Amino acid sequence: MEFPLPLLSTTLKDVFWCYVPDLPCSCVLLTDQKERQQHTYWIFELECLECLADKTVYYPDGTWKKILLDKEKIGKKAVFRVDGVIQKPVIIRVDVAESILRRNMLGIKLECVEAVGV
Image 1 (tube, rainbow, N blue to C red):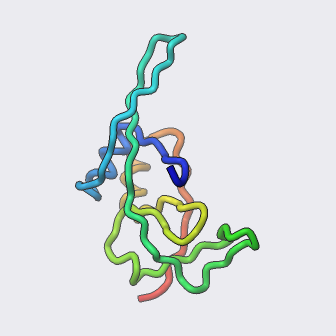
Image 2 (cartoon, rainbow, N blue to C red):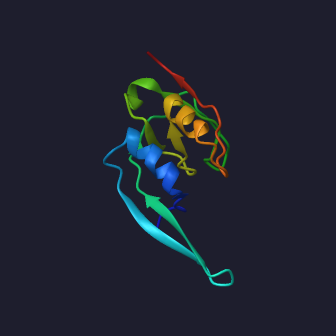
Image 3 (cartoon, rainbow, N blue to C red):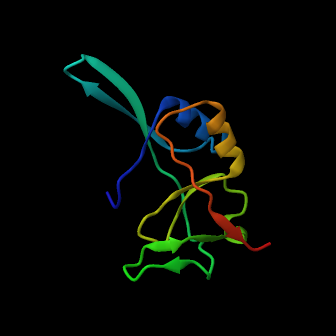
């Protein structure tokens, strides 16, 4: 494994599948032995795009300080990871973010990222 893989709840997986129907997912069961409960989550494999704009600002260790995406390199992708940086963040379009926010899910942090270009 190159980096930690985020786990999706079933609700979030269903949102992602609306926008990326061929998104490969694998089911993972997390068991709380003390409470005798199991919870279903999903590991997913997002496409990594080399979509950083030239004006992305980096710290000396290679992590990004301010990420700027190139709209032309992204195209119409709705959900993807950024290649070429250590963090490999998950990027979602605004319509995907709105769909997530309408479902009142917990444990999700969204940050606005700037995209430049045509």
